[in-house]
Amino acid sequence: MKAKGKTALHAAAAGGYVDIIACLRLAGCDLNLVDYENRTPIFDAVSNHKVKAIEYLVDCGAVLGTKDTKGMTCLHLAARQGHTDLIKLLLKTGKFDINEKDDGGWTPIMWAAEDKQFDATHLLIEQGANIHIRDEELNTPLHWAALSGNLEVCRLLLEAHADVNCLNIFKETSLHIAAREDRYNCVQLLVSRGANIHIKNKDGQTPLTVAKLDSKSKNLLHSKLDLESCQKFIRSRILHSDISRGQESVSISCINEVDDEPFPKFTFVKESLEIYNGTVNWSISKSEGCDCDGDCRSGRACTCSGRSERQRIWYNEEGLLKGDLQKYDRPLVFECNRMCNCWSYCRNRVVQKGMQYPLQLYRTFKKGWGVRSLTEIPQGSFVCEYTGDLISDTEADARDDDDYLFDLDCKENAHELYCIDAKHYGNISRFINHSCEPNVFPIRVFIHHRDLRFPRIAFFALKEINVHDEICFNYGDRFWSVKRKEFFCECATPSCKYRDHNG
Image (cartoon, rainbow, N blue to C red; front, side, top):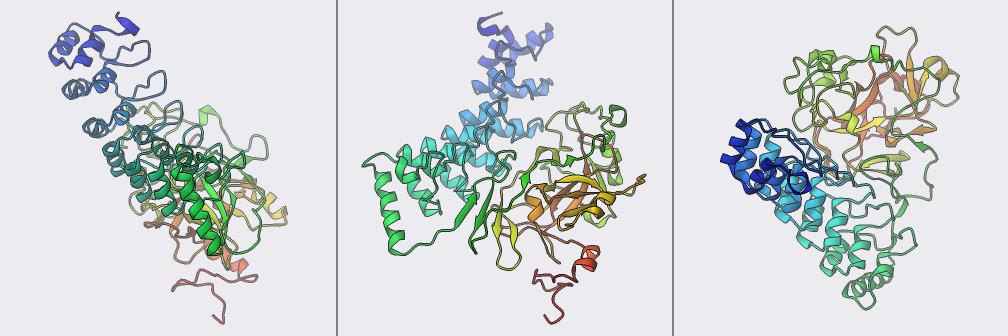
């Protein structure tokens, strides 16, 4: 054993000596031995940019998904050092989740952004890295790019629709950070892209307040403030920076640009709640995991996907819903779960990873509150889940308000039907409005249990959703057969079926 617990194989990998690695392997050396930082030899090869050694270790079946003592993978390391060829090589193996977090909640693109690695950041965005995911302190890659002062990386992230006003745990935007560090070019860019100069951090300070005295950044923000005053600028009311309170990986802000309606009262819950003990059957004997190795790629031998509609995995390599699942009658999708032998990067794990795209709760002109996207959402993407109280239909009938009920519609082997009530407890989905031409649709998904009475209701994108498009789904004929006596549909689409009789 060498310094820091390294072996001869670690040293050979660090030096890129493929012939020595081959000899050591033939002599019985384990390719996956770890040093004191829990790093296998392939980490040393990546750290020293030894491409041939990495290719050899990959071909020989070295384990690739190992994390070191700080939770970093080889992909994190390659991104931090800006090795685009290694990023491509590692991603091509299919053994890495491009959005994997280390122990600080940092994804590979965060390391690339903070270390001013423009080419690596650009490549990761091209390969589908999520620029909206937040670390343990709720910083996004844009926060870190602003801290490092890299103008081009900031521009890259903004062009990919990064939320310029996203707040971290200290309630600071990227503009706060750039102003404090006097990253003048970044301040200029952020302001030009709509950064709100009035947002206050937890200490009540705006970006202007935190900027260094007599700095170029402070002078620029002063000029911007003076210009707004001359124009009698009316700024929108940001009612909440993140209604999930950090529970989701992406922020969900609340804004009112219409009237004086305050932030709606409800408690945000990421997953549905059982109000009666023992409602869901969590028995291990009723659950099961697959024995797949790695990614469950074929899906044919995967016992989880075997329970899904058409006995297949419905997600592609990018985690997008494929095929026309919405055309089937009440289809069921079973994701891999904590009982499975497959790895976290398995493509049959989508809904369980939570929201990946930032949404915004906003006040509409005619429909009350609504939900819109703050970024482009590809067709087939998981958007959000409907959460609330899990209750029986009998309990639902006894409640006064049925505005937030979602029927689980699971008649399989059920003596009583159940629904989700999001009146008091729920998430952003409770505000999604109806449209006769929806852009999302619900799918019944099972993850950590197999109790068919209680699916999770996951919304997926029916088509590509653009920035600031309202998120809508079709409530269905059953809903409107009751509610049309009380109000009419306001979707205003050409195919609207429930508009005012006089409309």
